[in-house]
Image (cartoon, rainbow, N blue to C red; front, side, top):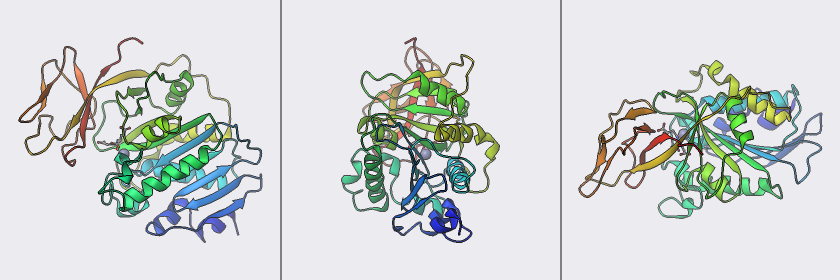
Length: 341
Ligand SMILES: O=C(O)CCC(=O)N[C@@H](CCC(=O)O)C(=O)O
Ligand SMILES: [Zn+2]
């Protein structure tokens, strides 16, 4: 039997196994590849990969996709990398934890089943009404898996891969969680450019996203990375994801990064988070605008019976506009180009 057959069953790859077992846990199973790499299926959709010569001090990498079940292209990218590794096409050098976040939602082609899992990290899953729901339990499990994986390493990196609901004027962009005094390391900007991501949004406060959890609680260099638009399994143009696939493969193999010829990432800062305040909340951004649509100073973005938000003295752009979120949750972000650092 091949390593893939032993881990996932006959004729299955990691994605097929995850979808098959979407509503069940999978018993822990380890196998050692011909080059000594230890591959452990920790549970459904959670794979730990440790090269033969790993030490506790090595840099470690977490890559997640499918935290939203309908964001399928990054899931297909990770599945492809796992297939190549298990088929012996290349050797792993960087200890890596790969995560397919929300298998039940993936199997149903939905963003989530009961609650948006990317609002349940940093302990938010402990609160009612989330704590005993599928997404609450999975968020807790993923936090534990990341904590154990970090172990003694002081150099942890986390890329949480997503695709966006709306089209984007800037197709690929990353979000950097807020940590006081922390600056984006140049090598991380270089990695993003290598992955075809030319735009970076700096968050202005901590949140309960997966990347904010690994950044704040685990001290990782973490990014949420938006790679294109949401499409069902099998309908993605994977050529649009080739750069991120190649960059991740290069990182996992431990190869030297390419020279990026002095390329610079374009940075924006979040200046306002739009929250659904309840019955009287009115959002003035139309449903069909693209991410990064710009609004002139003074434009009314939202109002309710007590407050309103108008664009400030400089133009601002909207990202992730979505009025269909529960009360208290994010309807969108207002951003503007970062003044020189
Ligand atoms: O397109 C959308 O409206 C949402 C795409 C998405 O899932 N984005 C993430 C961003 C997380 C972050 O702010 O770091 C999310 O909303 O969870
Ligand atoms: Zn998402």
